[in-house]
Image 1 (tube, helix red, strand yellow):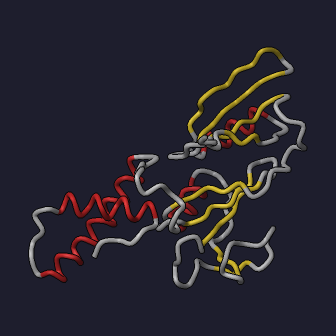
Image 2: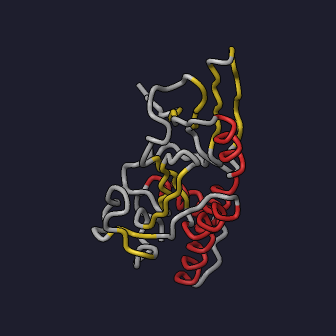
Length: 205
């Protein structure tokens, strides 16, 4: 049975302030429903995300600002930093972890700058909402094997699809340079490349 993470509840102290913050980031406003002064539900969704964030009045008993380590995945950490800053957030500088695996809690073992090898999964930045709920952005360009079903390929947004097409086009250009011939079956090659890249399996050459 599939069990897909759909919603994360974030505790906030001021619903209107939180709504203004998240929508200013470009997150889609899905719902804002109140059944009275003591119960209100606001749902927002980050661009391209299959999961949403809910906050409001009487939707959680957690202390406002206590959520930590909520991860958002991007394919360009530097561009994400610039966009967050432009939209009014206060992101940290891009960093990687001294251990090179994931990242430590808080700001421990942070090394300034992206991962030196620019390895997928290795570069991060962080930001918080007005209450202090903490988010981490992680740059992922190629998934580890087994992370996605190789029989199923989907893209969360047109930008994600366009990025995959650009990477496939660049790799296909190298493929044609190696073979020394134009490939009339490039759509099939593109398709194999994009499915393999998303599934984390061996890429065509």
